[in-house]
Amino acid sequence: MQEGTDTSSGHPAVTAGVEWRGDVYAANCPTRLLLDRIADKWTVLLLTTLADEPMRFNALKRRIEGVSQKMLSQTLRQIERDGLVTRTVEATVPVSVTYAITPLGQTLVQALQPMIDWAETKMPEVGLAQAAYDQHAA
Amino acid sequence: MQEGTDTSSGHPAVTAGVEWRGDVYAANCPTRLLLDRIADKWTVLLLTTLADEPMRFNALKRRIEGVSQKMLSQTLRQIERDGLVTRTVEATVPVSVTYAITPLGQTLVQALQPMIDWAETKMPEVGLAQAAYDQHAA
Image (cartoon, helix red, strand yellow):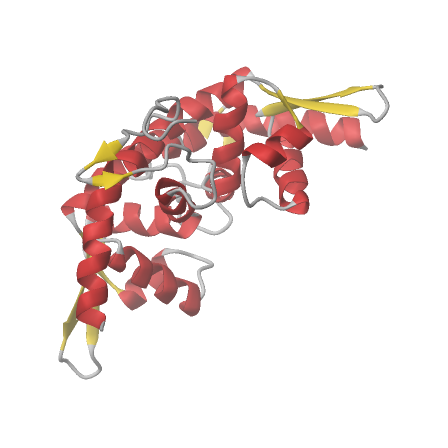
């Protein structure tokens, strides 16, 4: 395949001066690497939570049931580095750390909304499929 | 919070005779459990690949770089159980196993498209944010 001629994946060949590989299925495609991260349940739950209002670390931990301290820290650091949230430290005792969504993060939340709507509306159909599968498998 | 009165998460209180807990952030919410699975990179890559045409197991393995045999089998079994793909076995030697997307799966691919578009178009902005973060951290 000639460089810059693949349009099948929807990649622009050149964006903002960066030359792209045109295959999201290739392990080293930059967009694939980004998709690896945003297609992640903790990222989705954190961003949709922060889209409503800024929150402190401990409040996020309480809000998102089942997330470990380590996973929460790690995911927050990653999405801060990606420019999706900001981290503000106030010199209280103990220190208060507040996370807020950025305008870029808001655009991602909008893009994730159809997936969340799908999960909320299609759950009964998925449940029926699972019941049929399990009966067949039994 | 009173049962069935929460509309903040977009949950219908009752759908298809199933009573929902209205909080996608709760670890035992059925929609949260579903989101855990569809917000997964292998699921996204498999479904978008199969949306174009049915494919055999080995072709999928070649198409999606970096996926292990075990992870591919496991994800395919899960999305088959969810009613998103079908699995057809032909009695050739060796046996041919073909996966195809279902109409339900197609609706999910449509719902995932904005997220994929976001990853493809916003990559440069994320890259700039990462460079600024790394410079600050260094």
